[in-house]
Structure formats: structure tokens, C-alpha cells
Length: 463
Picture 1 (cartoon, rainbow, N blue to C red):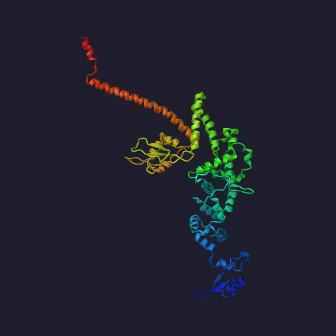
Picture 2 (cartoon, rainbow, N blue to C red):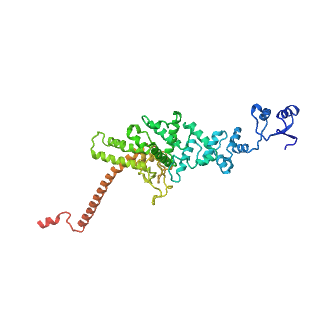
Picture 3 (spheres, helix red, strand yellow):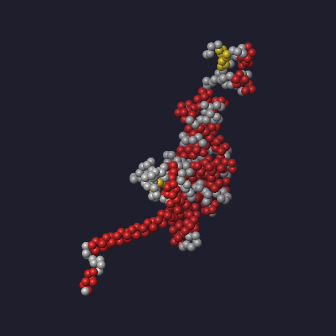
């Protein structure tokens, strides 16, 4: 206690009595006002002006947490009291401390607490949605739309389920009389399908669509999930489960290809497009005059089925651009479907490009082998006697990316055509080798006298 300081306990004297003593009777005195109770509301607080020009110190747990986390909004003390279960763990406290911003409000805190519980790398809502549902598939199981994700029990334990539902409602417009987390991903998928579909949505789907103001958020959320390198697999499982629940295969026969061109929601749609649209595109590309026979259609259909197979497998492959040893020579690249395969080498020793689920490694290899890519890399390469490229230059090359089905179609077509050329080249080389052997044998015979190279023997015999 400071020398000459007087302590006034507000639980023993009235607030008005303390105010008169501080401002009228002893205006120059030093006082410490102590109260074990919460501050009264502003309109009921006789000491409000004194609190505002004085310095306050609070020793309750919520106030200590506010100070430790560096939060400036004092009204959050009540919110900390409601979330006391979460802050009972020092480990959780330390994790959320790394996410806190000084001006965070209650909603921000709840979102970041959910991120800690769900072990999400970022506390952004779209990422939380992906992480919560992806967690159910990490053990290899399918997404179950009849039961909540496994991590949901932990979220409910810390009373964070209601705030999460409120975030879902305000962001996606998802609201029902009895909302369940299980129905939410189904609504997301239907919204994405309806947004990209050119035409009327099937009547049975319309009751599941959210308000218009939540549609764009749902589309962006699913697009990020679909393109995620780390969580894209769980999207595929969600899409397959939703397609089964919605019986999407029964609706597709009634749809024209043009209506489905922009739809990336379901694999069943990709199959339909890969077979019909790819065949049509190949025929237009290979036969611009529309002069083709049944054999040409059969070959294009074979290409289309191959594209469908590769899209279904969603190969995660690797393309390694390998740099040249001397300037002016052509660099080469290697497509490595599995870097763990024996002989694949060390992926850290060379620049590596890892395709996303919507890019084909075979297509990327073809690009890196092209004249355009080599010309581009030639301008960026460094070195005098030993020329090379860094990972930065590889990552920032300009690359036109057609749809995945077209990439696979192009790669498969080039593979088929170059295989014919390679076969012809191999035959030509074998012929060259045989001619070279004949030339060597002919020279040897002429030198050793086995044959008369100049025809003199015949002339002498005639004479």
C-alpha cells in the first residue's frame, strides 16, 4: 500500500458516501476503492466520473485473461466467464494467444476458439468448415451426412456449437426450424450445383437452396475446398455422398451438355461431359470439315473414356523441370507420378512443380518440353559454363490452363501420335544401323581384296 493511502471498501460504505468524501471532504487525499462485486451499469453508477479519470485494476480471472491476451475491449469479461471451460487449459490459452488481435470482439474470439479446438491452421470461417468435415475422413472413413463430424463433440463441450451455427447462418443463410450440422454440407453442395447449372434447378432441390445473399459465399467456400491440396480428398467424398443422397444420376439424363459445362460439383457430371463433350470437341479439332467415319468416332470415344478414367483417379503427380548444363541446349522435364518410387531421385534436389487436382502432370510435362517454355526459361536462366534455373522462375512461368478434361485429352492425343512417330523413328534407326553395318563390311571386303572394287579383274580376264 502507498504511504498515506486510505482504503475504502464499497461493500461496507455507500457509493454516495464515498463520492462525497473523495470530492468534498478530502479532495487532495489518496484513496484505494475496493469492491468485490461487478461494476454497476453506467446510469446506476455514482462513481462513474471517478472511474473514468482514475486508474482501475481488476484481479478476477476474466480481467487477468484480458490483460494477458492484450485485448482492449473490457466488456469481453462476461464473455470470458461464459467460455471459462476453454481457458482452463494452458495449452489452449497459448494457442489462441497466437491468433488474437487487440481489437477482437466476442465473435472473433469464438471463431478463433473453434479454430484451436478443430486444429485449423487459420481461423477463417471457410477454412473452419473444411477442417471440421475433413477431420471425419482422416481415418479413411467416408463423410456421414447422418451423423455430425467427430470433432463436433469437442466444439459442443466448450459451448462453441451455438456461435458456429450463428456464423453459418449469417454467412451462408443456412437456417431451419431444427438446424443440424449434417444437413449443412448438403445445402452447400446443392447451392454450388444450382449456381453453375445453366437452366432450371430440379424441383426436388429448390427447397434446400439458401437465400440469395448466401449463395456466393457457398460457391466460394466449395471452390476453395475443391481446389485444396490438403483437403480436396474430403470434398470428393462429400460430393460422392451428396450425389448418392440426391440421386443426381437420375437427373443428368434430362440435362443437355451445354447446361452442365460449368458444373464441377459432382464427378458424375464430369463423367458425362468427358464422354460426350470430349468426343464432340475431338471430332471438331481433328476433323474441322466434319469428314470422319465410324473408326474416327471410335478412336475419339476411346480418348474420352481414357480422360474419364484419369479424371476419376485424380492423379497427384509431379513434374520436374530439369535444367541444362550449357546455354542454348534444350532442357528436359520428367513426369514422376510417385516420388517415392525407387529411382525417382531426391525431390529436393531439383525444381518441382506439383499439379493441383485440376491440372494434369502429363499436360504440364508437355508444356515444359515445348519450344515456348524453353525459350522463356532461356531468358531467365543464369550462369556461364553451367546454366540453371531456380524454383522461383519455375513457379512464375505463364501457363494457360484449359479444363482438366481437355488437358488429359491433349496429353492422350499427343501420346498416341508421338508413339506412332517414335515407332517410325525406331524403324528408321534400325535401317540406318543395318546400312552402316553393310557399309563397314563392304569397305572391309574391298580393303582385304575379297571383292574387286574397281572391276579390274573382269577387264583382265576379257583381254
